[in-house]
Length: 536
Image (cartoon, rainbow, N blue to C red; front, side):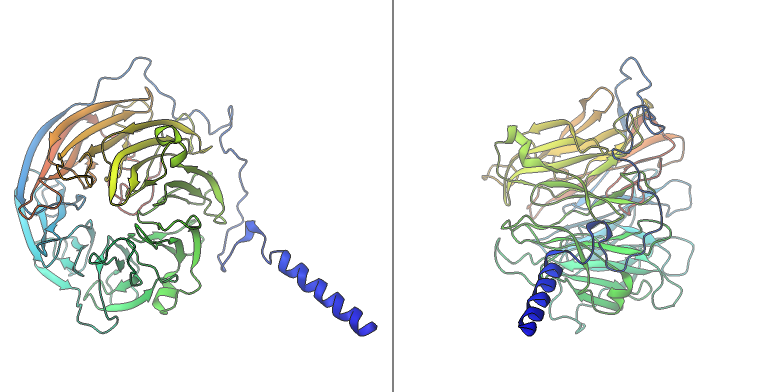
C-alpha cells in the first residue's frame, strides 16, 4: 500500500510540474541579462504626468502647406526597387545618393552613385541580378571615403569603393557552404569578428523566386561575412526551416544588455515568425536556441517579411519592438521580456472589418503624432492575398495605448514604408507616404503612377504633395543634403514593374521645411538605416 501511495504522490508532483510553467511570463528567457530598471506604470504617460503633453501642437492655425521645388532629376535604364540612401562621397560637403537598379527577368542590375549637388552619375558598377536592397556604408578598403555594400537577386552581394565605384569584393556563390544561394537583403555592419580591423557584415539570404505560391521552399540563412573580403565567417539555417525575406537588424535593448539579432522567417504563403538570436550563436553555427518573439496565427500560412521598428514604447529605458506581420497584425513587443504591449489586427478595421486578408510589405514608421512622449506608429497594409491586391489601408496607432487614432481605406497600393519627420515646426511629426500602382497584381491593364501625400498629425488630415506617372516602389529619403538648414527629399520611380525595358528616375526636391533637431524616421529602416527611432 505504501509503494502505490508513493507512486501516486510522485505522479501528482509530475502533473503539477507540467501544469505550472517553469518560468513566469515576466521572466521569459534565454539567459538574457535585464538590468534592474523599475517597470513604469501603464499607460506610461497618463494625463497630468511629467511625460504627457510634450508634443503639443504649437500652431493654433494650420501651418502653410509643404511645397517643393525640383532641384534635379537623373534617369537611367533598368527598374529601381531599391530605396535611396545618402553618404558623403566627393568631399564637397553635400551628401550623395547610392541606390540599386535592375530587372529580375533580365538577370541584370547595378549599383549607382549620384552627385547630390547636381544628380550626375559619379559611378556605376554592374551586377548579375536586380539589386533591390538598400545601401549601407562603412570603411572597408582603408581610404577616407565610406564604402558601400548592397545586395539583391541571383545571390548578388557587392562591396564597392565609395570613392570610385571599383569592386572591393563580390559574394562567391561557388563556395560549398550551402548547395543553393538565393536573394540577399539589406544587412547591417557588426563588430569585427575575425580581428582584421574591418567591420563585418550581417545579412540574410533566402527566397526562391522560381517557386510558385504555396510550393515548398528551402530554408533561409543568416550570415556573417568578412567586411574586408566577403568570405563567409558564419552561416546558419533558420531554426524553423522556413525561408526568409526579412532584412535582419542588430538590436540592443539597453546599453547594459547584450546585442541581439532580430530576423524573420516565412513568406507570402508560408508561416514563420519574428525571432531573436545572438552574434555569438551565429558565429558558433548553431541558432537552435533562437527565441521566437512573434508566431504566425495558427493555420495561417504567412510569415514576417518586413523588418520591425525599434523604439522605447514604455519609456523604461529599454528599447521595444514594433512589427507588421504578413498576416495583417501590428504588434508592439516589450523589449524587457518579449511580452505584448498591444496588438492591432488590421482586418478588424480595414473596410469596416469586411475583409479577410491584409498583408504588409512595409516596416512601420515611428514618430511623435500625439501629445505625449511615447512614440507612435504609422503603418501601411495592402488588402487582399498575395498576389491579388485590390486596395490598401493606412493607420495611425497611439503608441501608449494601441488605439487606432486615424485610418484610411484607399484604392491605391502601398509597398513603400512611410517616413516620419517634423516638416512644419508645429511640435509633431508629419508622415510622408507614397501611394501608387493601383491594382498592381490584378488583371492585365495596370496603370502605373505614384502620389506623394503628407499626413499632418496636428490637423489629422492629409494633403497631396504631387501626383505623377510611373510607379514608386522604393521608400524616399528626407535629409538636409547640403547642410543649409533646409530639408530635401530624394524620391525614386520606375516606368514599370515587370517591363524588360524599364527605366529609373531619381529626383531631388527642395522642401520648404526647416531641418528639425531630430529626424524621427526619415528613410527606409529609419534615419540611421538601422531600424531604430532617432532619439528625441
